[in-house]
Image (tube, rainbow, N blue to C red; front, side):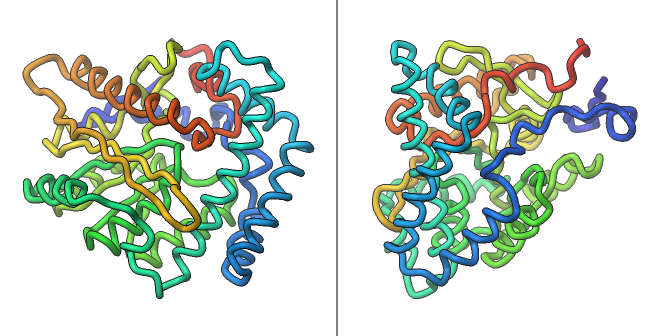
Length: 330
């Protein structure tokens, strides 16, 4: 069961927070452990870029060959995008995905440690991009920046902090690996972005509201739901669940929602792809307004994935995970 707090955020009931079965950790896979993540984090900062690319190229081929469940999971995810492709073709696309993820990771780690490169050297931005951010922040309601497990969402924090010099809070689920979680928090802290881990307390919504009241950019990944904290969307003609919290908070506070995706366009070079800002309607039932906004984000994400399917980073069976996180609960 779940309960709604005063802000409309669905929280697990006490029995689910302690002692009850927990939902399957879909993100607990072979690519998300402290050994691999830590080795990448330390090695990439020491090695030349091309050497790191070479190691990543070979390493991802080895992972593609040896991690059968991961390879097939990526292929199964992409079957929704390419319904007419054979399984072996989809599995070849899985290798492209793994290699794209390796390059994105390498470039992000190098961007953190290479303070000689300016933000303009990292990002290709047009004048309207800055205008969108400036205009939204001038409203003094903060901004809810939503993205997905697509492209290099982590490097976007460098654009917000170093390029636009805006206060930023990243709302994230704690990593399954304590080592990975610690490194990610240290990374965010090093660029001046604070981390708010969800489902650690009942005052998450209050903390988000405080950041928005202080005119922060609050960034959230929206394409994975947490238990009952979800809103239904259609993605590639299939039923999926997106995270409900960012849209509830936007409705409650009047903060604009800005979907934005970061795409790698070359070695150490990125292009932000902001979408049309969303203002959650208040002249219709809340759930209807939230679902409409969620579908708008899902449509924007689908368009980007069709353009660059290799940037879609789910290394588990995404469609299977759309089932209820707490089986048996209505």
